Length: 634
Ligand code: PEP
Ligand code: MG
Image (cartoon, rainbow, N blue to C red):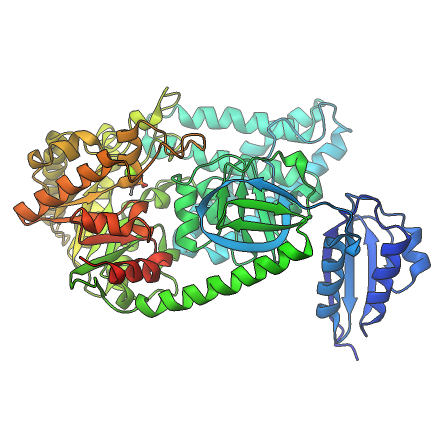
């Protein structure tokens, strides 16, 4: 009996000999074991064919690399589609695809099995080659892509919260703006392909926005960049778009790299993990992946051409391997490890809710690092000792725009409300380095990690910085808010911000707006600060080991090649941490560690040995970090 609902699915044929006689028999036999009506076609434009007729299925002559689209209707339709697409992905059990393994570095631990979704970046040059089909067809292509981009933005808007909604509204308006689109349509009429016409029009606009002297206005360039990439992606062939945006449940994202904003955009409940050919474990996308518990391998030694989109795969982000077309034995072994992992997680979970106390009786504060409001979803404030780090740059560039004072104030207030009386530490904008904000961070620095980033950037743009300080001073009146400065190098920087904060709080007060000067602390990331910590009269210190390690070892946190040298256990790093901890004890000020070291249960004992008693960790690490603390003798 049918409920009349038709459901669909797709799978790529990775079997080298395609859908020949033996696989066709297997597919139709399996189809016949279900009551549901089943049909399939080859590619988006193929003819629908009865999936239970071997003659018809064989007549499709579908080769490797083609996508099979299925539709099913009937009581067991979902089960039928899941079984059939699984059979296609297993190469019809032909066993002809050899298992291949590619090594990589674990950036976020976990295990995932599913199928590969090969994601390439949108090309700026156009997908239609250099020759335009004809102006009318190209105009239609662009109109279609604009409509698809608008649809995606509407969808993002509905699940993204107020902030996303305001920012996305601006992009949606741009998409409908004839001043923006007219030059592109004119170029198409003159014979240019749609992608090139649109890309070049947007480039001109982006350059225009970037050169604006008003920083808020200049920052709108990133909206345009985002929009340009979205429309160019929508202009790409269908398979390419499908691969990037809406995989069936179980995809493993494989790409050269992944930006933090793209990461935030994807629905990770549908994916089993990420394998990147580039990237590094200390990058921001890795931090996001760990915070969400998404398995991630970086520096995978493969080429996108080594694999086929849709091929079955295992992401082993425990031992650091991407296993493509896994054998049955591998699949069995992975399932066993997944079970063991689940048992370990269950054990860690027991520690999650309780305060962390070491075996030697030392109470260790365990706070959380917050990347965005989504970090707090499904998280109870009782499971931590407050918020030890809020990375506000994600607020700023998640969708490419600078939020105004009111929007920032609302976000900070929500954090205070969530923490219910526990401390909330908010770091001022830490843009630059690997977190550029178009229109704000400098272009073309030869070494951005040693450039105008963190507090240096904020002090270079007081107009932007003072907006954040005002929002913070207002929010500080609502609860125990602490402000933390990133990338401080000299005591003068701290003094300057202290003065600015006082001025802004006083100016707000004079206008009858309630505001308070919150405690002002610093990140210890620059060796000059760690070595001479006594010079810095801050209310508290938080050690940013991600940057401290890169500056002490002279190894970029982004480099896959230097990952062995980028060593948090380098004695020089541990000595600096111990030095700051000792100063904290002697001067009665809190010293915490908010870098990724604190989230790694293998490294936590070294931090405790160095005298650290306060950690700020990825929420997904709360259970295992507290477990590591409780096992420690000190
Ligand atoms: C750090 O450097 O350790 C840190 C917490 O800051 P971020 O990773 O955001 O640079
Ligand atoms: Mg840092």
